Image (cartoon, rainbow, N blue to C red; front, side, top):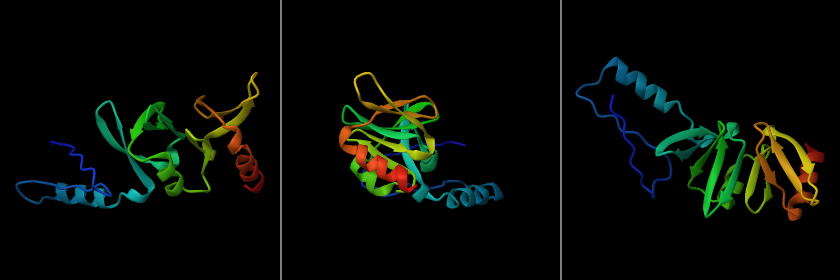
Length: 148
């Protein structure tokens, strides 16, 4: 089977077109699988020229660096097109929390907060990834930890 990707910046959600000489049981199975994907729980990301839909709840964190946003997933940093501000509004509030101007973490993958020698807090995630916590977000984080 031939698979290709075409980027359309104005597209609001992924869509698929299947082109074949005839409709077969294999094509029907493929259509059913594609229709069962709930794109509201997925986010499109790119890594090494490949595009994929990542399950949002499996993403450890989102980080901004050099005007790009990356999703930490499967020990890799995938590039996403959304801004951190858009992600803050889109992500499930029960699972994700903004910890700095450059980072959002998935609380389900948070292992602990450490205080480094300079007095800054660092979030340690399940895969060992570390993300600096900005002082202006400490109060919000404390409130979320107490209420959850």
